[in-house]
Length: 344
Image (cartoon, rainbow, N blue to C red):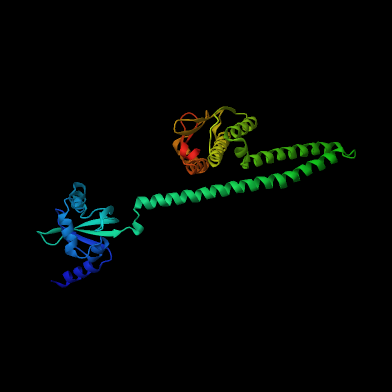
């Protein structure tokens, strides 16, 4: 045995990853101590003997056409996941990469490097776990956002609103004084008008921020009240076709926020004359549809629009277990579906 062969033998036996030598026909030639231990066997002979007795060895997959093609073209395969059966019958999740090794002109073997997946979780399972954790964190963030909205609404109403009301009263008193000249009288009238507009806007913003309307009135009544105020403010015709649907409070709030965001976007960007909102119960869940007859958007604009205006809608739909679809053929159409197991 040459010096290089001795080094390779030492590396094979001492490697912390499992290593296996397999003939092109799938017959196991040798496994290193790490792999033998990973699979729960006592020694080399027991491991090889057990696989010889098996009518369908887990290592026969290397003879499959897709694997052989990767080895022929590249000399190795991409790293992939496999499930192996241990001696005691339990399963081992592992990541495997195969390499074609030419020992000489006549002898070719396939070597596999096997890495155990930590905590026996596959990549898909770990990804699903990460997604669930991300959803929970996002839900916490949404709840925190709603609390902030409530606090902000209260502060606007109690502090700014009261100050503006006091200012208007002072202006009214000043207006009544006989010593006030005509030009001052006109200016005071304008200032009173401005303060009235500010108070009305504060009341509107405060109402939009608060979630009490949805929790107290329900989703249908909340949309009706908000839609009436929106139509009066924007002059855009709004048609409502709403059913009374039994919906969980958090889901109802998420759908209401989607309606708010959609109508805000219609008023700002769509140049629409008519808008329609439908809310109904279907066979498998709740369907919310919002459509306008505006200018619509190109794919580029829709992508940009999604990154800004529709990101919050998508987030809210996903947080309540729903799916959202946005299209822009003639005007813009938004459709949200929430399954019954998520909505009630």
